[in-house]
Length: 141
Figure 1: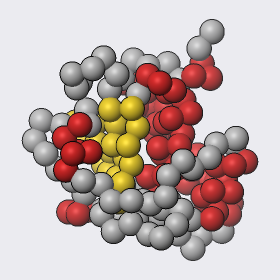
Figure 2: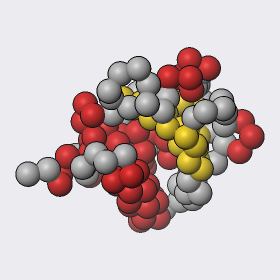
Figure 3: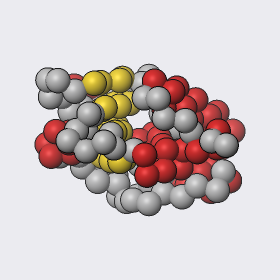
């Protein structure tokens, strides 16, 4: 972990408009202030994918950020780096914990498929929190 007691997780994908935005939103919701969440892309899009916004809104979640590039400082500050679909463009620094989540790209998929993809991302986020010994906010007594 970084110098603080709160771990930092960077979620990265190519456009930072779909998968990484969904994962970051879900992680923020489930972890609250027990995890610092960053997200970025190697080639950021102009806006977050509308269907992703819609599916997250259905769950009472929002997207707090517009797509942006990840930078060296973000990677260096992260304890865990989650990559999704950015291949060799994804950030890498030795000594970090990397998770490469093979998650289908919901771009140009029907809304039902986007929901299924975000369900997959949510299950992965929940699994990560278990590994980090951080109970999801909806599981706390």
